Structures are given as structure tokens and as C-alpha cells.
Amino acid sequence: MNAEPTSKEEFYRECAALLGARHDFRPWRQGSPNRWNNRRPGNGRFPGFGMVRYHSPSLVQVALRRPVAFRATFASTADAITALRQLCRGESGRG
Image 1: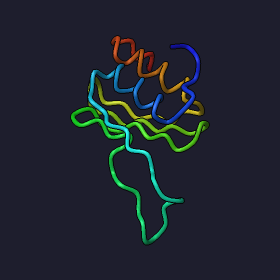
Image 2: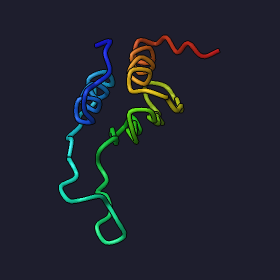
Image 3: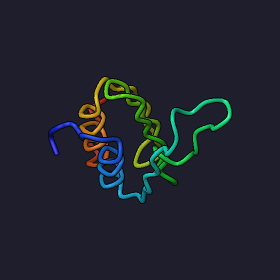
């Protein structure tokens, strides 16, 4: 997949496939989260691997323990997917 994912669910599904992890996407059902209806944990959490958080199409944070310890912020979902693909292949590219 070289194009950017078209939705949060598709993005998380692609991340799970690359990591080899299970992920159950749970969409937010009400209006926007506020002090009385806080977010439910779940999206972006990959047990045993770490977290990949989609904040917006131009902000993705990655904090992983496996396959290697890795933390980064990306300006697009495509950049995040590319980095995950390289990490899972063992090509960290960081020097």
C-alpha cells in the first residue's frame, strides 16, 4: 500500500497487519470527547508492541517496544506506514 489510508480504521488496520498484531477499531459514537464523555482507550494500542496514535492526517505518533524500540512523529500517515514497513523488515534506516 503506497497511498495514504483513507480513514482511521484503514490506517490502524494497515498498522496491525504490518506489526502482525490484533487490533479492534472502535469508532467514537457521540459528538467530540469532552470532560463528561472521555475517550475510550483502544484505538492505536497494540498489546505487546506499543502505540501508534493517529491524531490527524498530518500528525501520527509512534511509540513501539517491538519489533525494536522506536519513537517518532510523522507528518503524514503514508510516512508512518513506510517507517513501520521498514521496521518490520529490520531496515531501521536510523543511524
